[in-house]
Image 1 (cartoon, rainbow, N blue to C red):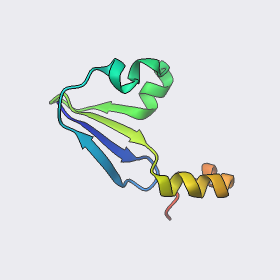
Image 2 (tube, helix red, strand yellow):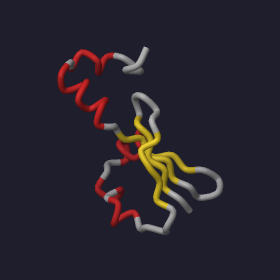
Image 3 (cartoon, rainbow, N blue to C red):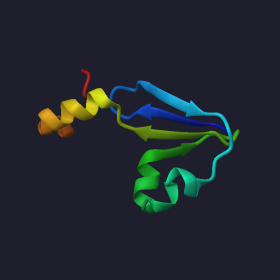
Image 4 (spheres, one colour):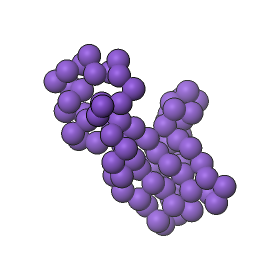
Amino acid sequence: MAIHYQCRHCKTKLGSIEQEMHSETLGFTQLTSRERANMLSYNENGDIHVQAICEDCHEALARTPELYELDNLIQ
């Protein structure tokens, strides 16, 4: 089982964790059900895909909050 992180806005691959990790260690248990549904998806092979945010998109959103209204920051 691997855990793959990707930016939810620009789809940049942020990294992967190949070793087995517990949900508590990664902080997934602290997410609400709604947050888990929005951020996590699971493959049939057990891989977890986490939708996060990269530094570039975070900075863009901090400078221009109106970008939150868009589905994708990069048009």
